[in-house]
Length: 300
Ligand SMILES: [Zn+2]
Image (cartoon, rainbow, N blue to C red):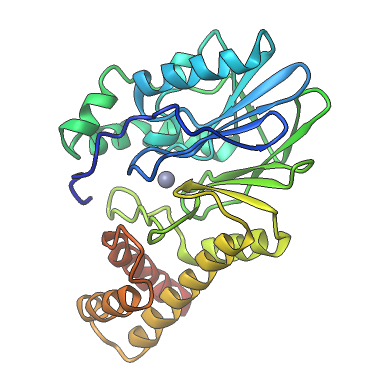
């Protein structure tokens, strides 16, 4: 895991974007390890999407959500179990109902502690935010798709199956045609492949391509990525095209029996040339590693 050298991963409640009636996003201001956070309201309930990393960030998010809720019931969901998305859920206990898909609950139970340990190694600014984290199991776990009724507004919680993690889910607000993708899509940066063999090899480039193809085909009006600037369908097609390129360029070289090291070197240079403005280049080689492993499985 690359060492973290960016600004402190702190959620700043400012420049809140209103994507529709009672539909707010606290933008991540392009700070690494801060997610875009949603607050979606109906007549009797409000749904918060993502907690921010650690209890201090989550306290800010909860305070903001409670202010918006004005007494309405609060729900919390997270797009997947990764620390900046879900490791603040403890703060919501007793204040909100924490609801996630089954595969995500299993990810948290199986890998939460190891991710906490891994992220604490990323440097002082990250460790500081993780201080006092107590991993918190969801209050409710659902199977299949969940239609959450907020009063006059239904929000769809839709697990996608294994892609960026085993337990990814997207959150759709059909009346406003808004889609929260979690880390299935990031804007202005290379796709995050949490490929950390032997500790975590759950990310699947091939499944991810299938999932993002499906989401892009739905053509949502507004796309809220896990990280980076809010966009539209183009954001999904950009990620789809990048993942396809990464697969094709990796596999072409793998077919000619090139070493993984040489593939990383060449594909990295090629992807940077094609996407010179994208940040987080360190994720390219993780993606290549994942796709090399999937190439082997594909042939087996
Ligand atoms: Zn993630």
